[in-house]
Image 1 (cartoon, rainbow, N blue to C red):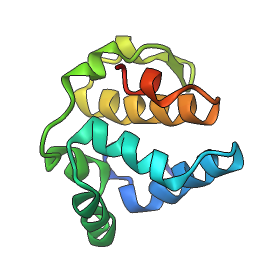
Image 2: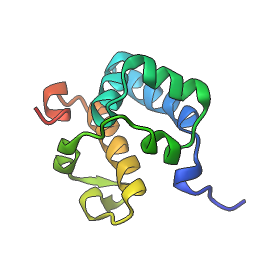
Image 3: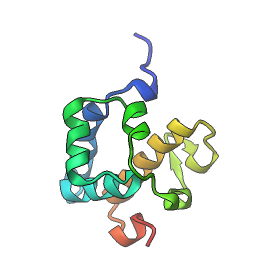
Length: 116
């Protein structure tokens, strides 16, 4: 079976995996939501609506109210690739989100994760 294109993956299908990853490391769903809302500009209600609609990552990010300009401060490696070197804008956004969830799971303080 061929790998599904990253942009066509359902955000609602991956979201529970983000929460599970965080909770396994003693973090909370609320922290995952805070990170997603910080990155995308969604309100909590807007995030829940996106999950309910079952949108894919492409639509999820296209409809994001205010993508955070501080996202450019996110650096590091996800899946063996430096996120700051990714050229495709959608892939970069998805990997930024992956990186932030990784940082949460590794115990990093929320102030540092949110680049404050």
